[in-house]
Image (cartoon, rainbow, N blue to C red; front, side, top):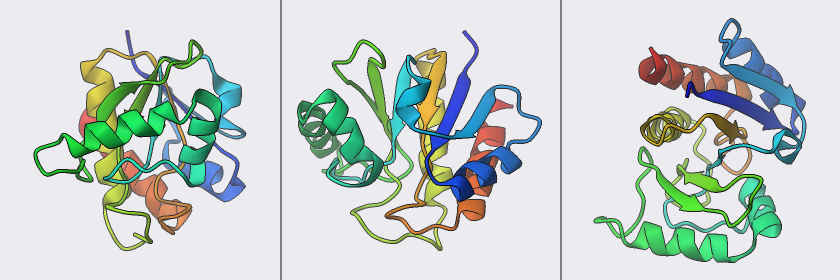
Length: 171
């Protein structure tokens, strides 16, 4: 099943930057809207942090929708990694418990909640998420902005990094 990425963000600057960066990529649909409006899907990308905390940003909306057990599972899975945390540049897949979006791809954009505007973290996180999505043969994957809220990365920078990751993984 070919990967179809559905990008949704409620920040119009983020949505426009991604739409511009991915112009001509038919497998990506970008819009300024709630990510949940695009459900159902096979998976949703979480740009959480390396320790699996999901109590802020888009991740807080995820746990409000599917339950705090999602953060608990993410924290446990991150802690079980060889490093004791999930490094930026790696991703794991967890069950959400929801029938509308059964899988969550946890792909941290930061070690802990902090600004990361001058890093390649959006590239690293998106690349890891795409690799996992392809390995799992996921079809429809929802994605929010990466590192643009808590991370403070300018939307055009994040979008360009995401496009570079797409080109590296999908070509």
